[in-house]
Length: 367
Image 1 (tube, rainbow, N blue to C red):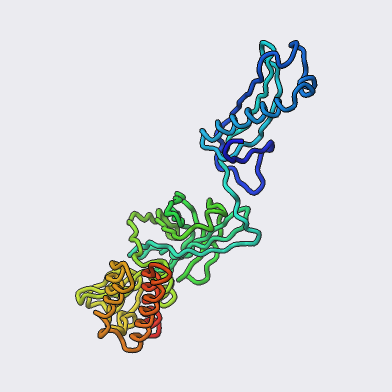
Image 2 (image 1 turned 60 degrees about the horizontal axis):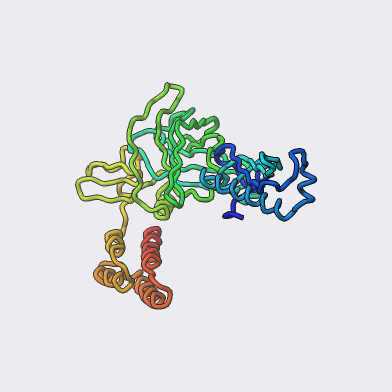
């Protein structure tokens, strides 16, 4: 038989969902002339005459049908049927037909699944800030809700937005004009929408890694407000973003930084140096200033430019005197361990850098 493809006489395939119908297809295979004597011969007569030749004819017809399906981009055929028929000049053949389709394997989800994805873009002015998408479901359907930080403490009734998901293959799924309704919110600072049905399939859910939200408009008892601003993208990795939110609050998107003229708040808003608190979220500058003067992110960026642990260690040694003595030994142990493992397990660059980042994040969380 031709290259493997799912073939069934039914209208569906257990364990798979039909993604796209590609149309009706058919093929035929004809036995040589004079295979049957007389145009009135029936199938029973033929079957008794030469079963082996009939079987070969059937396989030829089915193989041709599969080739036709694959040319259309199908990976399955449903509703396949087979008909034995006499042709002209005493020849006999088989006609095979079906519908070419594209199918996706359904994820083996027997229990409810739950996934939360932090939103990786944000607005710097006083509009409802989407901070997290929550997805719940099973093998049949996925529902979702939106969590927002409400700086103005307004009674948000509904919010219309575009939702963009990115999966592990960096493929994007964009869902336009999604309406989230907020019917019950006692806490006006962090508001959660009602669950709505999502267009994300169970298979897609397992692969999602990122979500971006673009606000179109939102409704309050005072009126409907359009949002034409372009959101900014979060620059932190998903792991570092999660760590920041756990430490500084669910609306946090940036680490505090200053150049003496301006300072960037955890909410992402850039404030004048003379401002003691952020004009968007109200955080006080003195409360979010890091107690560690050492800028480890600059060191991490330089480490990422290197290829091997021995080079990464060289970068560390250039900064070692600036690093708090409480973490120096731990960092050196990470380097030595990385050097040893790299001899037997291959490149350890990403693992070592990840451990170095975690050391500083843990130290920062204790400040």
